[in-house]
Length: 128
Image (cartoon, rainbow, N blue to C red):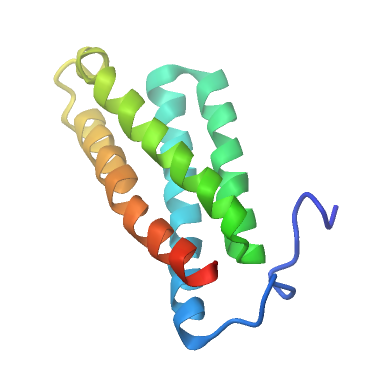
């Protein structure tokens, strides 16, 4: 299982103080991706929420290994998530149907995807 879920005790390179700061940010992004999986489960169904766990796995690998290759894939997935959420926004608002809690879930998910790009990019620049 070490290759699928690497230990965070053995990163690709020896972390500097700056790299540790970005690594901490990446751990918070894992929690945000779990939240996004939950929201996708609500709005898009079980399969979509389940497949979003792949993004959680990539985020975990980025955090654990500090490998810039994983961060490239994580950035690509973040941009795809932003694009898909934006392009289907009217549908999601219709599903929420005026329920303020579901609308807040949507807004928080959009904010997370947009905000998460910055620390992912900064971590990529630091790790490469």
